[in-house]
Image 1: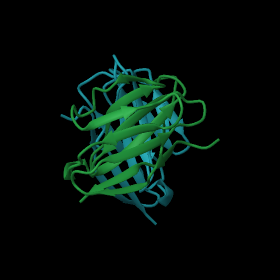
Image 2 (image 1 turned 135 degrees about the horizontal axis):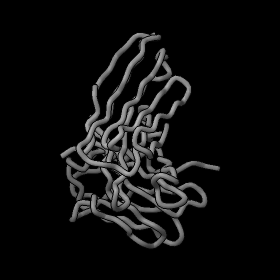
Image 3 (image 1 turned 90 degrees about the vertical axis):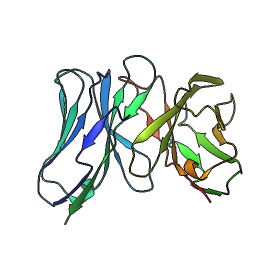
Image 4 (image 1 turned 45 degrees about the vertical axis):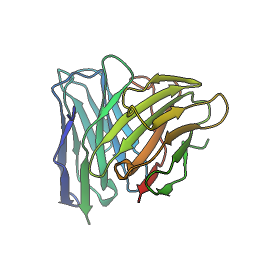
Length: 111
Length: 116
């Protein structure tokens, strides 16, 4: 059973386009993190959101945590080839030490 | 300040052999987490350790897998009598305190285990 479902699983777009990646769950999380992972490397943390409804911006990336703290979205404006990678969301358990990772969205930005 | 280091980066084992994966956390970090990543799947939590203590091993298979984080030296994930299904990328992460809203987990580059 996958606690966090990401969609789409694969995304291939042209440079300059906008895109949104979704991370959904029926569970409530203490926090929600987004990572980017490049081939052959470990995930790198992009952002942590904590409060329901919170919106954070990181240059061309906008992250939103759902009001009920069950879901999140990542929006990229004017995608660039350097944005190519695997995007993972991870929810922090309300009790305990675990982080539950989503299934991942593999993004390819074509020049 | 060096990041999280894992070795080996690639490991090939035959069925029935033992695999030892090492993780050196970032300097000053005393919290270590191990994850497994299968192709086209997200990372699955395995175990969380602090120095000399296993805090949460709820994600570890009950048999053949063990982990330690001794007072001196790296954290070790040990897989005995490996089977083909153990083939995966194993990632280690470390944090200064308990990872969560205040602390960041920093991931190593992973060890790719292939069981023939």
